[in-house]
Image (cartoon, rainbow, N blue to C red; front, top):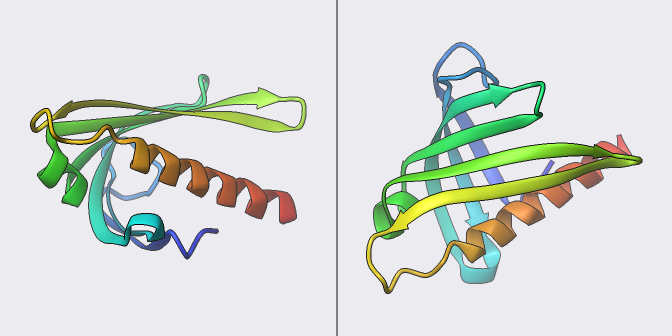
Length: 123
């Protein structure tokens, strides 16, 4: 759905991609800043009733270079008349005060959400 942003995803642990405990490695590209890297995530929470997923980011450039031990992201979908609103939030602690806010990753994930939405609308 967005091959220019996510080039590969691999299930490392767990039986299914959509279960708590699944560990997934993502090869991603952020062309705007020339970043090509890998991030490993673990599904910590799946809540079908609230339509949300919470991931911890376990390794990769983002965590190792910028944020202390834990970077958590949460995706929540809220139905609307035609489609959904996507809310993507982050919990993090910077390695030091010189580390930038994760805006670039938030903007990247917004682009991923838009690509997926466009793909689903065209299907």
